[in-house]
Length: 115
Image (cartoon, rainbow, N blue to C red; front, top):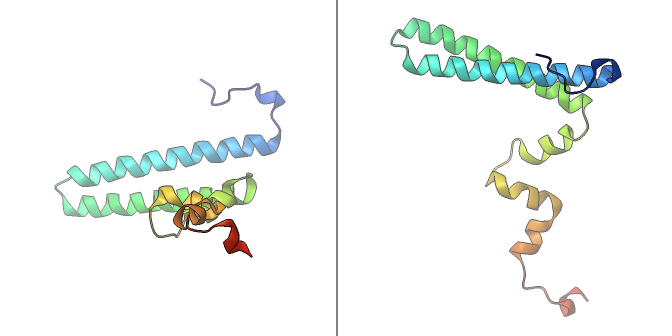
């Protein structure tokens, strides 16, 4: 089964590369999950250590792909800047980034206060 939803011959190189990166990212994330589950159930500490090393390599690969997407696909840069390396409730970050959070926090301002 093809990973493409449109005719490949109609897709430009940028779209093909983006699809490659997104599919690779899915595969890396899936591998992280698989290793993490195996680490959780293994009783052999040496094997756990090896699998943890492998899992961490997959995380590195996923991060490299995310950085490639940030540099090469619209919107990734903006969204990553909004959500990564922040504190506080993740679901409130969009409101804070767009300024909506400030209005919600201080609703005591009146028209007269703007003078």
